[in-house]
Amino acid sequence: MVHTCPWEPRGRRPTDTSRCRPLPASALRIGILHSRWNAPIISALLDGTRGALLAAGVLPHNIVAQSVPGSYELPYAAQRMYAASQTSSSASSLVSAATDLLMSSGGEAAATGDAAQGAGQQGPLDAIVAIGVLIKGSTMHFEYICDSVSHGLMRVQLDTGCPVIFGVLTCLTEDQAYTRAGMKGRGGSAGEGAGEAGLVGKQSFQVSDGEGGGLGDAALTYGERGHNHGEDWGKAAVEMGVKRREWNEGRFID
Ligand code: RBF
Image (cartoon, rainbow, N blue to C red):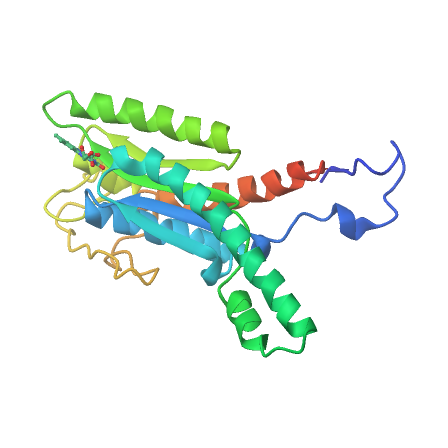
């Protein structure tokens, strides 16, 4: 572990090590955006993302999720979601400032203050995960949408400074999407390479109920189901959210 604290002279051990510890994930506020096309696959990816965020220590009430019709809408939604989080944080600062004033003048404002606290972390989102599943059809839509969405999401993160995690699967077939959502072998399809994995005939996969876990038939092992990339996106959101905050404060901790 390399700890580089800008306020300590080169070569000297930090005197206050707590200032050099990485920010805990419990301090983060993460946005999840997802499209509604290919819903069962989206549902598995969402579970993977949410599971990874919670496992890293992000608090449930600090995860804000919104849906949009299709992947094409993701860049616009990411940009507006981030803007809204900035507005709500300044609105909540106004509420707490007003609360402080009322409290100091003897008013009964404690309940308002508690409500603001209970609403979760205040402040702009630390990272946004944009989740979509694009599957190539017979027209040029796939190419146009993939291109716009990837460029659009990149633009949003560079324009806003809020990391946007690219959680968009761009697949040539539905089977490729199942494999990348950890659902290989689901439905009427044996999935990529299912023959080698001995999966043919074991296709009673169930879609998650949205509560996390329970992604499929217990007969299938983790490796046989493919890999749920949502888990990687959740971890990436935590890492980038923490780094963004640290970098904003001129700290470089790894
Ligand atoms: N949205 C997706 O998220 N995944 C898709 O695979 C997908 N395929 C589409 C194919 C066609 C022919 C069209 C017209 C739209 C598709 N969309 C898909 C929806 C698109 O992202 C967007 O929501 C709509 O075009 C409305 O702006």
